Length: 201
Image (cartoon, rainbow, N blue to C red):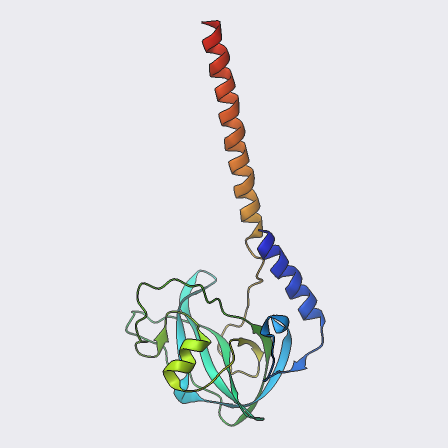
């Protein structure tokens, strides 16, 4: 709970800062987390991939991630948004990519590196199980920083770009805490009642 609340506070502070150019050579990406940035370049459609098991408003789908070849050199992964899954697992949606020079706006995020996979299998039909910039760079040969731009503008139409707050669900942890304290209090009361009853006997 406290970790999520700290991330929420970091998000609010970062969102209050003005939009900045994407810091391609940043030394501390953690300091840039949740900052609003702007990056110009061209999308690399050949290396676009989908991230599986993404739910939006109760519907299953994918996140569409496309490398952006920066105008000043280098590249960065751009999460262009969510798209619904097809009728079956074999029906992978084809997502068009904006052509030519684009200007993308969004917030920087640092993908989690502690995900769990049953096996580090290669992607099938352009679908990855997790968003891992290091693994993407190793598989494609395209060097990218360990971050992703969660796009809010300039990344194409038809994709949902409603990025959740990192502190969503913090109240659920608070309810769990109260629930377990209540269980502990109940155990203490029952133990006391049974002990008193035993002494009376």
